[in-house]
Length: 220
Length: 220
DNA sequence: CGAGCCCTTGACACTGTTCAAGGGCGGTGG
DNA sequence: CCACCGCCCTTGAACAGTGTCAAGGGCTCG
Image (cartoon, rainbow over the protein chains, first blue to last red):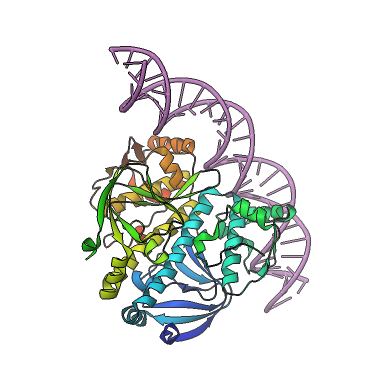
């Protein structure tokens, strides 16, 4: 049903904004391939990423009940995206309440991740934040099959990590090199290698329950 | 319909946990009077509040699609709460899809606030975080009629503010006294007095759009 | 070859934390 | 009735973590 609701599929280049905050929206976007992010900017133009999206995510489904968004949505890499008109979603929720609840569920997963990001920024130091984010990303990527073992491609720059973890790029660089030196993880050239899982879990105070996975085990 | 779905109303004392993370849930809680919070704890036992709730909020509606929560829910003050069984919510979403979307909408408001909390912790300094939280709380309280002018009762301790803004109680004390001295706001004894709205909005980089209010103006 | 992006490193400043001590207030028990 | 205890807030001094500013190196692309 969801596939049938797609009205258009298109390619978008890396680093393009596809939805601006406040814009009236009558469609939502399903991410097919590539990585995207949701952003809020401060007055000085510094960005805070509030969510990262993987293939399979219904990126701005929030706009369906909300009508417009409070943040921007942009691509991180080249992406293939599908557009789904809201009136078709309305039809789905009316004809198949069960499917409607599944859509609802998926927006609540976003909310659960948001909460975890609040925790991350409120209670963890730089190394913990990086560790937490890397573990979250790894588990999510494994569930959609774009990561397997503890080494995987995650095409983010250090500036991206800074916008995610509330740090400057300079400090991201220092933190990553310290994590490398300590043998926790090696992040470079868009490739993440998780080395000491136990230590990463400890540093990031990571508990995967919030991802509501059936098999939430953090194992290589 | 929602009122009819309530199965029980009861009183809970201040500082009691009513839902623990992970617990299987078949009901959700509507807050009638009082203040509640949602919390995540770190290993050392320090808490991060991830949401604060006012009368009228459907506190753990997230548990309806999710089945259990990833965080704790506790009262801040004595509260009157109503319990709503999930099977009655299922019935509502099936018989009245429109009402179902309104419930969905209300969980997305929570998500929008979560995002704003991420921004607050990621990009603002202590004073900005306090300013942002005070403005958010004020607007929310005005929309449900428990605040009017720029002076209102908000029964939080400095430790609560610390758990909300990711600061130590010591630093909350210093920050509030600096805000008092600068004539921004006076927070004491559970009463907030917003003095210089323009300066608070600037410090907190506050834009109320994310609350999706019809009249979102920040005016005394 | 030059421009631009990404990453690294060093010196220094600043914000917030930690540890410690003390004051005010309300409630409780002797 | 008073003493004491616990909670909440405040203040000071030393310290840690992160930001800022500046310079430079490697790589890719035009």
